[in-house]
Length: 168
Image (cartoon, one colour):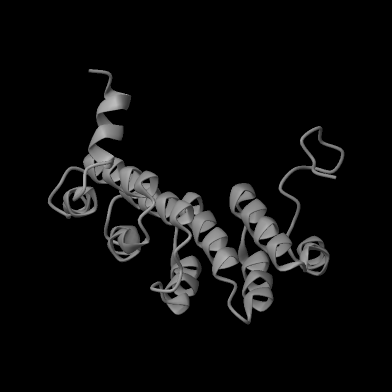
């Protein structure tokens, strides 16, 4: 049986949410947890948001955390997720590949003070991928030009001026 067909058959089972959520437990290998997070994102059941959130918190391995955060972006279920937690995690997260997910999730959540949060993030962010995520999040709010202007004044260029990779 083709593995792609097997996982799709498993996902379509009536109790798939409960069974797959069980694989997010901390005693499972990290790759199993990451695959379970992916499957929950594919399943699309918003009830999985709380379990994915638990997997995405500090203490889990980065592979599992990335899988959980990507799945949360696919689920688009923000009501059960505390905005303050996402803001705090974005502030203290060391891995820029994970910080970018926090910025993207904040854009989807759309808290009232999102522009101020993104401006503060733009001042301290030095990773290109995370900065692009902030720009994308700012675009989602409609305030890209205000924050992008702040970017140019606050954040040093990541590539030398005139470099072929420079964004225009």
